[in-house]
Image (tube, rainbow, N blue to C red; front, side, top):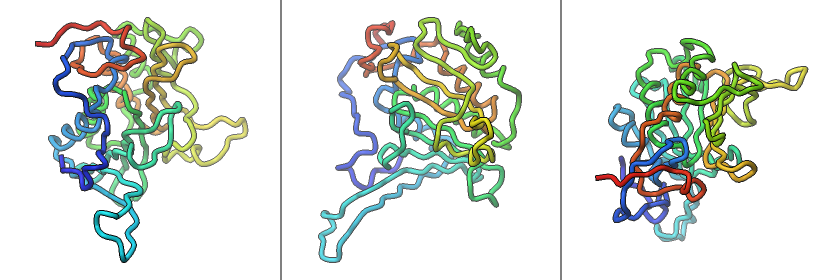
Length: 273
């Protein structure tokens, strides 16, 4: 990972105390990101051979000293070797919100390099477990054609029901919920601003309905703020969403030093080491 150009403005301001004890915790979907969501994902992408570019935007008047330069927006862009897929860390770049949470990672792909725009995009807020985004990106990296679907919606639901999640009573073929009723995954209308090549994303339908895509979120208490949210454009292949679903619902514990305040009391934990 490259050193930040402006260390006084860290890309990920949450830097946990390394002296804090580590725990193996579960369930994974309520475990948060350990305060290292950028590092967890960026290190994996570096290992896959993706190139990282740091983009800093700012204002610099002619008479200003270098240290007085005002940084307005910044982002880190990671690009795959074939340039067909990329991931952006946009948390420091005035991102839009999803479920009242800011977007942290945006992952996109296109069919070929002659197309400047993404075929589809997926979005992840802070506290999506880093292990889940890593699995999604590793699966995306392994694909020869990142835009071609392999399988249908049942793959996604099979991914979570295999780990004990329950199908939605009202929409058994389009949604599921974990046994504690805290986390959800649902195939439905895509929220505004989600980029996708599906033409329905740009034009209103007669019935007012937009394209359907997968949405996932954790709401530890009904009506309380969400812990995390993820949104997949209508053209994201179902098999890639299934990788996310299988990973986020996994019963395997994850290593954590920092626990989310909203779910701390709901997590099972065992000291690590």
